[in-house]
Length: 200
Ligand SMILES: Cc1cc2nc3c(=O)[nH]c(=O)nc-3n(C[C@H](O)[C@H](O)[C@H](O)COP(=O)(O)O)c2cc1C
Image (cartoon, rainbow, N blue to C red):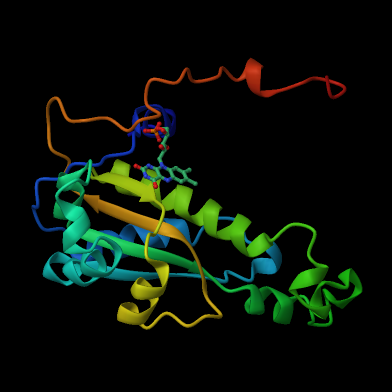
């Protein structure tokens, strides 16, 4: 697909067929995600990935059986891939303590950072990942991780790694599937998104 088509046709997918997706497809998409910009080229993000039957461990922690009956998007649990996206503030503090960055003062600790670049980098990489998945013909959803402590425990994610969300991906179900609650909100135009010259 042309880049503009990838961007224009990508939509969050919440209903999957259950068809398997190979690890190599996910790693090919991550090969594009690692091309994303990164402050100080720290690249302090990591995805904890699960494929096929292994995704059950995620859902058992994040969506306990008692809550499943009323879950709005049961087809999300058929996603062939679930990846928890984590970022490491410590990696950024260490990187900015290196000689070429020490003048920034950001090596002093995470409290010195006016903008958490670990979150910015994780978001940029995730966006590229979502576009790459779509370009592969897969559907994908970025979503909030519920029951975070249970997810951490089952996936062995240390406290030092911040979870910014999860990506589910797989073959999308065709046809009339339930949309997200925000889907009907108007999308801004590019002109709506800019104020030229001065804040107004
Ligand atoms: C930071 C962030 C968090 C989101 N969290 C959720 C979520 O928890 N559940 C969900 O169904 N969609 C979630 N979404 C998807 C948005 O609802 C969706 O991107 C938005 O409605 C626009 O739709 P589109 O991406 O299909 O164009 C999230 C998106 C972002 C960027």
